[in-house]
Length: 226
Ligand SMILES: [Fe+2]
Image (cartoon, rainbow, N blue to C red; front, side, top):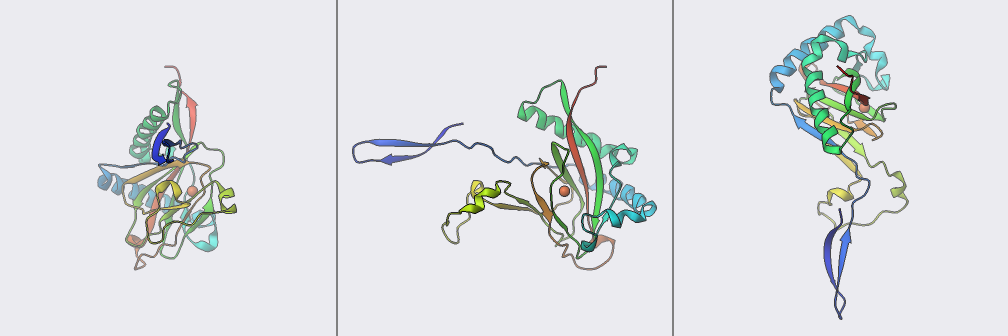
């Protein structure tokens, strides 16, 4: 949408300076209102998975960075149904907001959990084969690593402007965004958007010091006729 951002005085009249914002990078978020009871359920279900899946450590995106990574089919496990149902409701909101075909729906195609004990992190990556990806924070102690999104328009590093020092840049001029993990928060972002997770700097080494998330990939599917 074109909008006027300034009136430029020319001496003999005024020129209107307008701006259009094309190709934005959309990140949706929500805070689940029933997060504390939801998270208790999910944590118990994740712990069950961890007990029977000791190999999870090898699935981490870089083993040397630590962390446990579950199988990627948790959306088929009835113990996670409350979260998958809720996620699908939020995804319907995104479909509507973006004007997607109402004969289609956004559907979770893979879903997994990652537990990062203090010191562990995840390197920058994208999620091939998906349209949208998401993360839900189950447990995030103080100091748990933030998620970093990086401006996908990498050609911008060819030349960058200098901004007013000590002044917060406008959102549209950011090249990196850090989002603090908060239990009960869910984020949805385009699967092509590079993201990484900072090291977990939480104190202690007990189960409460871990940063625990559920992550998912999402695709657009045609609604089945019933
Ligand atoms: Fe990811």
